[in-house]
Each structure stands twice: as structure tokens, then as C-alpha cells.
Amino acid sequence: MAPIGAAVVGIGFIGPVHVEALRRLGHRVVGILGSNPEKSFVAARDLGIPRGYADLGELLDDPLVQVVHLASPNVHHFAQCRQVLNAGKHVVCEKPLGLTTAETAELLALAVRQRVIAAVNYNVRFYPLVLEARERRKAGHLGRIFHITGDYLQDWLLLPGDFNWRVDAREGGVLRAVADIGTHWLDTVCFISGLEVDAVFADLKTVHPVRSKPLGGSETYSGPTSVSQKTERIQVTTEDHASILIRFRGGARGSVTVSQVAAGRKNALRFDMAGESSSFGWNSESPNDLLIGYRDRPNKLLTRDPALLAPKVRLYANYPGGHAEGFPDTFKQLYRAIYADVERTIAGTPREPEPLYATFADGHREVQICEAILKSHATERWVAVA
Image: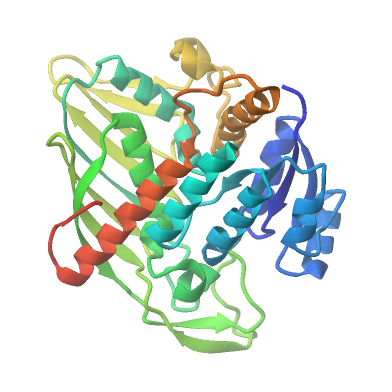
């Protein structure tokens, strides 16, 4: 694959992850944009990137930029995506794609008109054993799926002194834990199972209705506010915890617990997928093992090894068995798939008809589910997904 020029918007926790993954694939990160020119220039210097942009307009005017990665706070995704698409650039947007389905529907339609690659950064799909579970399900290993259960648990917002822009509904949106990590779980299990969410019954809980916000700001996963820092107390309306019952189209059932206040769980996305022939179990904190369960014979523990994976999956598992691959590798493999389609588009050849990466259609669907979850919580009843 020929090197492609990319620029990253966002210099917090996840922006540099995008930068590193692109470099590992051999693509050129030609510039970066922070929330103001000074932060852009500092980030460019610290990350060894040629250019720090003053604003998004300057970034889009750079002829070296072919793909734009948006890793900014959620509230900016819609406006920035629209600006990037109108400039005719390919785009990779962090989730959620927008804060409402009105926004995501507009972005989806615009991406189709502009005929560019428009992807949402659901990286969990690209753990090799997640891809392998999908291929085995497609081959009939599960049979008819009865139910899918699981959770996504973190503890980085456990204390009332823990703060991040995601906590503030004005920056992250009215849903927080569900939109931030719950959508990863939903995208992952739907990607593997091929099922679609039909209806939800949700209960949300704000554990800390008041938090201490550092006046100088705070970074994701940075730990509780220091006693020496000046803070202000702010009211919090976004949820720390959610319990969601799910009805899938076709009759399967599901349930998921989402929490950012689960002590000791750093980043645990877990699922159990029960079918009539076997079951799959996986945990993102042990991502190189897939449990395959049986009723009538011993269970199997499949350890990630390219030699044991389906041919389609081997492309996304680059190290031999016993050489662990984890979180940073998922971004590399995600961008491998996205940039292959970017290259095809540039060359004028057909794109992948069923891409493994999440498209804007997937991003729109996730926000439809989020809106149903909000409505279900408010009305205390089952709500169908639009």
C-alpha cells in the first residue's frame, strides 16, 4: 500500500493512538490539530509531526491531507465531519458519530453524495479473535443464537474527584457511559452475530451527581483530582452505570451492563454468545483467548495464532502465536482495512462491498440505539429502535 497523507484532530488520550497506528502502517501523519494553535504546535513538536494547524480550515486547505481522523470531544463531531466531507476528504471519526440521529443521518447522506470513505472508529472489531468469532459464526459454528450477555466495565471515574470532559453533557452528550463504551459492546456483538437490535429496556444511574472539575482541565485516565488543584463543583446528569435488556431481530435476547465506576475493572469488554450448537466467550482484558463452549464434548480455548485462524482473519494477526497482540494493534488493523479502501478509491477501483470496518451507516445505527435507550430510561418501558 502506498503511503497516504493523514491529519489528526484531537491531542488527548486517543489522538496520539491514531498517530501511532498510522505510522506503524507506513502512512504519513502530516499534521495535527488541537483546541487552539498553541496546543497544536506543542503536540506537533512532541509527537514529531511536521505541522500543527491553527484551525480546521487550515488543515483542510493542506493538499497533503487525504484522510482526516477526528478524535475531538463528541460535541464537535457533527460540525467537523460535515466540514471534512464538504472538503472532499476521507474521514475516520471517533464514536459517537453525532449527538442525535438528525446529525448522523445528515452525515451519512453527505458521505454517500461525496463518494468518500467515511468510517467510525470502532476498533474492537479488529481484535483477531473477534474477527475469528465472526467468521466461525458465519460458517455455522454457533447455529441459531439464543442470547448474548455481557458487560463493559471500567473504574476510571469511580471517585467524585475523577473528571473528564465526557462527564459534562455539553461536551460529551446526554449519554456518557453508554455512548462512550456501551456502543463498543453493542457494535462488537452485532458485528460478530450478524444480529440487529430491535428494542431496548434501559435503566441508567448517575452515581456521583456532583463532581470536582479541575479549573486547569484534566486528561482521560489521569486519576483523581489532586488536593492541591483548584476545582469547581459541577452538577452531573450523565450516567455512570447502565443496565440494558435487548431484543434482537429474529428473536434472540440479550443484556449488557455498562459501568465506569467498577473498581478494579480497567477496560473489560466481555460477552457470552449462546447458540444452539456452541457458545463463544471473550474478554478484552484477555484478548488473545476465545472460549468455545460445548454441551456434549470438552470446551476449547482458542489462543490467537495466525496458523489457526480463518484465512480472512490472518491478515489482521501479524505476530506468531504466543506473541500477544492488544489494544494498539486493533487501531493498526482497523486502519489497514480503511486505508485499503481509500487506496482503491484513489485508484478508481471498486471498494470492499462489505467492509469489516464500521461505516457511517453503522455509526448512525448506534446513535439510533442510544436514542432508544434514553427514551426507554425516561419512560421506563420497552422502546423499539427506529
